[in-house]
Image (cartoon, rainbow, N blue to C red; front, side, top):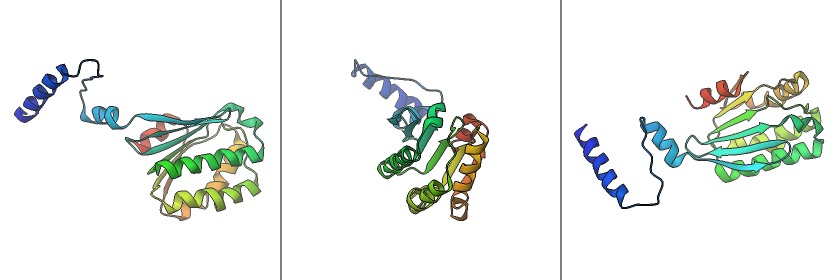
Length: 173
């Protein structure tokens, strides 16, 4: 405790020298670490989804908008190609697919494309966990389940959840 107290006093002394810089106090070291290193970066926003990355917990999050019902198959592929490009950039350990408001059923030919072109990239790199917030649209969810069935044969843990909060907590307790 004494060492921590001395360190904190030195930190406060140094903080006085950094006028104009952001300075915060935290009760828990995990909160401080998240604040310092785990800023969430909004990577891409379209009318159909938002993709963000949190460096503190190495999680790439894809959140679909209700407007996804207006997607064309080619646009859906583009959305997933962009997700793959972001995964190549950030190399996430965890993937959170928030499909709760996804209203577009993924057709069998697109499912095959996902299994051949998108998912292999994630499987070959350091991704170890996928949490999926299930779609409220039964047809979209059924197609997601079919598309993700092949992933379950690899060394990746895949879990489905009713809410974003549950999925997020499972990935980052």
